[in-house]
Length: 633
Image 1 (cartoon, rainbow, N blue to C red):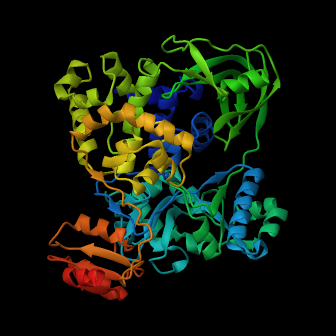
Image 2 (cartoon, one colour):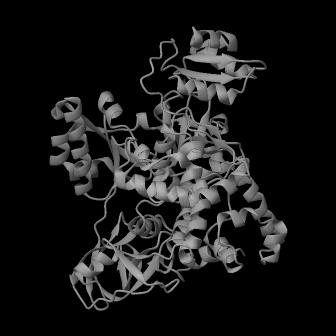
Image 3 (cartoon, helix red, strand yellow):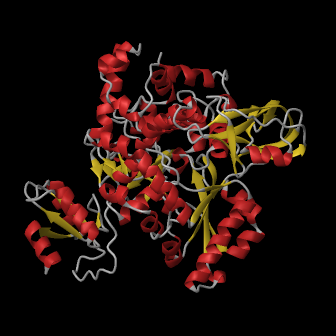
């Protein structure tokens, strides 16, 4: 059994709980649990995942990449991933009326910016389905995947799956679900959880008879979000009747649901509010969390993160809360420990944020505190930075070194096997940098006692990490430079090419929208430290997808500006280069021909399906030569 599997098994068996886990172990387990859930084979309960492990991760590391990525659907498919017709983001979550109020405040601010009367804004509320997310463009059905690329699972419709309310296909985003009443009556003896059944519909293998019958009985369906029953009203009406609206929505459909989704309906306001990397800002999902408890603290343990920050973890008397036994909770930072008296013998008010992560609301009865003076990983003297206690021994602290190496592969997100257990074992054998890892071959892994098959897999996954295409901003973010998360990396590379960023000074970075002077100074210092390692890794010729640079004050006068275009066939030049150039001159490049596509640009040896789709949707077809003539006239 691999180290990762062993750790996962011990967590499942409750030999480890969240507070026993390092930040990296916790993130790794959350990812494993989420993938298992998405594939229909949950390894822990929904409650424990949502309100213990994921919540603990959010409390400890609210900016952790796992929390910034679009929540993926299970990928138990062998198909090559393709770009989705439209990006499918996750939905931001709120666990209290106060969080909903903050969302409303953001709407009010956007209304002021657009000079729109807030009283005219309508809110729509729908059930939040607990199914298998997909996108139906009328010809193909795709899994959500990572939000940008998914797998083609059109076979589900080929097997007879129908659309909810007997409506037509091509309505965009939705979920594959099974009627709750039908599952309980006809399927619960064969499938442990609706997710298991939903996953069976999607897999390539032949359907069993019960699944086939569920499709015939229209108990298994694809439900477009546009078809869901809903409540609509103004913001004042939502505020006055919030609890009743929630109660009504929760019983609207005969499907498993895990909350209520609120969104604004005004198109202009939606466009103005936009989205971040993970969520649409004009939408939010509400989940209830009612349980609280008063708990005695048995002790406070310091944990070291990859940046050197020391996080206090409160060891608690075992307490039942929201269906789980809680024995640890994060104390956030040592400034809070000092301010509120969080120490052995103190009494805290505890909840499970989002019914998942144990969270200390406040200290009810303070006690004598203990502030560590040396790092528990390397024994260096700790220093204060504002409210945070820090280990500044960045170059030699084992916990930080291990954390940085594990973080690199986590952010790349295009390889398997280099989780915390593997990285810790590499550290034991003297590996201290990412560049050292890339120098390892299969025999090196064998010599470190990984086993023949594991060694072969690790070697293959290393190769995969630099041959598989990856965004340049993701590659840069993987180095973990201070103030350079994925969003800031992408923002930076929209203004400067990745090959030029090491030449930038503080002023040039600070002049980019979204960067402050302090951040710019930290980034410049971080880039200097990174340069040698970065240059070495580039010798492996990572397959980087380059970010298109912003075109400032350009007057695009060609008629394809803003149009949705699909490129297909063998072009005289590089098709990827054509796509990048098209984006840089204001054209929207999409991957599939749908009713929303404006032009299909064809080269040689074009597949007949693309032509048929264009003819079906009335999409204009242009040759490569015609296209070039249009954009250069």
